[in-house]
Amino acid sequence: MSESSATTFPASHSLVQNLRQQIMQSLPFSRMAEQDVDFFIMASREAYFAPKEVILSPADGAPAFLYLVRQGRVSGRRDIPGIAETAFELDAGSLFSIGSAFANRPVSTTYSAIDDCFCLLFPVESMRQLASQSKPFSEFLNNRVWGLLEESRAALRNSFASQALAEQSLESRLGDLRLKKPLTIAPNASLREALTLIHEKKVGSILVVENERSILGILTRYDVLSRVTLKNLDLNTPISAVMSPGVKTLNVDDSAEMAGLLMSRFNIRHVPVLERGELVGIISERDLFSLQRLSLSNISTAIRATDELTHLKKCADDIRTFARNLLGQGVQARQLTTLISHLNDVLTERLIEICAAKHQLNTTQFAWIALGSEGRGEQTIATDQDNALVYSDTEPESRRAVYLRFAREVNEALDACGYPLCKGNIMASNPELCLSQKEWLGRFARWIEQGNPQDLLNASIFFDLRALAGNADLLKPLKEYVRVRAAAIPRFIKLLADNSLNTRVPLNWFGAIEPTEINGQKTIDLKLQGTAVVVDVARIYSLAHGIEVINTRERLAAVGRALNVPESESAAWITAFEFLQTQRLAVQIGETAINGNPNVIDIDRLNSVDRSILKESLLKVRSLQQHLQLDYAG
Image (tube, rainbow, N blue to C red; front, side, top):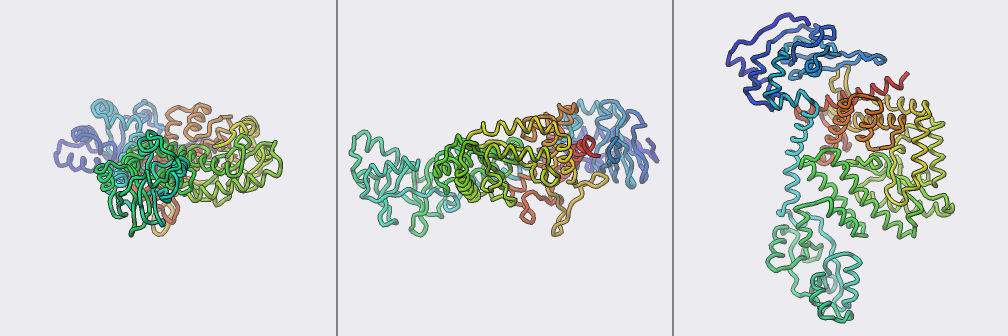
């Protein structure tokens, strides 16, 4: 290490105060006690480095200091055999030589000043002492990325918590809630007819109306026991003789709180809602409870209990609200995407059940296939459809048309529920994706044995497949074929790798984020330039090593073991992937998409913590991609 000049700090109160104010803008100092920050400053000395001057290199041996960039910029250059020299850039507030200082080994990177640069040099002996007395400092040194990620999650919790609470508030206007359509019946209808409707529609009440407007009364499930069952009433009795008259109503401009008070005051459980005197909905005691606690259980129960598309649309909206609430509670991306995928699965399964019954299809004869992010169980909020269908070889050719009509109905119903039709037509209603078991095996054989680069670019999504509904056994021969043959065909793996390496991570030569300008905003596409790269690399290595899991997190862990990389390295891949997923969810839930793209962010709108971890994450994505390049390029 060469130093043009070095300064040891005197015990000047004003100097320490000024430096403290400056460095506490960055992690880990922003989380540390002032006395611990002062300890860092007092134990450090400042060194100046001229432009292009080497600060630290592998030839210097184990570093004697931890380096904090106080002013200026530092480049780090790393030479990896088989790959062009790589570089990254550190800004003011960045710390370096952490891992090497802890392990007492030389750095693997050459650090140089880009311009006039001032660094604080903190002795390794003092570093260990400070780590023992400051928990934030110790946690940061042990795992910098995890520390940053926790800071990011805290910011997201604060951002979405108030919004989630507002959405669940009893102050909500009834007209702004997704009210259920009330079940109605004429006063001269029999009790048998009314009870049959209540049972079939799986609702808790039925309104007795005249001329489709005037509410005469109500009959609820709770009334049945006391007024019908215990009295052994004849089921041919007109409902008007059993109903409760004098129904209490509210207006769309009234609040949910008023509905709760009305129910409590009159000991009722259902309140019709009117708009300009016309019946537009009904709210129940259970609805008010769900406003306060939207849960995985009550959403999935509501999905399974209905056979009406309008109700399923509401359930789909509830899934998005539930996701927003969970993000406000600090739930991690992995858990959140798993829950979203599960609820989307439940909703899709219900639609498939309804449509299969309508088309008189036997669910043992076909399987609905989830592809892409749905297949991997890691869907975000803004997701279109990626699906296919396989049916038994025993089905006659004439059944193909029936399966296509069935698939079209499911695809269109999903679109109505907020899951858009796939622009690339990767859907079960596409005749090319509604095939027999034998036809699917033939297609995968062509991709693996003879596929060209363009074919494989379009087909990669099909290697993340999962049976979502129907007979999952129909996919077993297909999955086994892929597991065995993909690993045995080096040309196939290389073509996949070549396609993946065509996507560039948005970092410049120095490792700084290189955004794309859209309408004056500095943007990056978190999916195309981030998570999709990780998904691709994890998929390729999994196919090459016969790894059967398809979830990206599970794949990365398994790939790390297969490649014999340190567990800390594969954990860093996973951390980077989860951060990028979390940021995508924040954009989608916060509805801050740029140009209608739900995966694009304006990096200038990120706080300093998120900008830091975004760069760290993209560096990890690039290093993962370079690993693939080293193994399969050339």
